[in-house]
Length: 162
Image 1 (cartoon, helix red, strand yellow):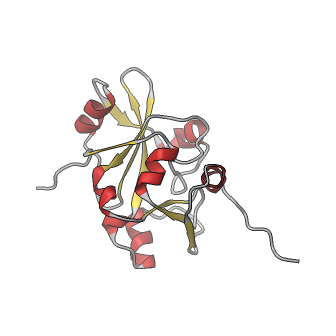
Image 2: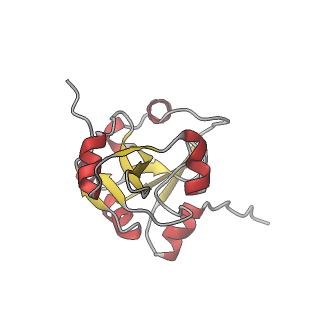
């Protein structure tokens, strides 16, 4: 009998929306940052994306998807979502807000649907790499398909490096 594939919420959302994607797995017992995952897998940083969750001055949550080697510019991010300011969600609150753990957080299949902004550089790729919804699992998919399924938009939200 064939072993049943363990689908994450993220994969189920993509399946329900008939979005094509690929899965990539790697050995991982605890959180390691996206740069180390990209290095381990030989993936370009600008094709590998991390999911950041912020909270606005109004108390609303926002999701940002940016390259693993970049930092979010909180002022740009706030402007894009129409807030006076946004700040990073505290690590201890990630699971309660998203249903995911640190290192396994993905914009797909969160507990609730939050406004999602994908760094505009993602559109340069036919396929980007995001977390698959648990440690050691990644999803490769078209960035426009990602934006479609999360009702997301594209904008420049990364800090300019000096």
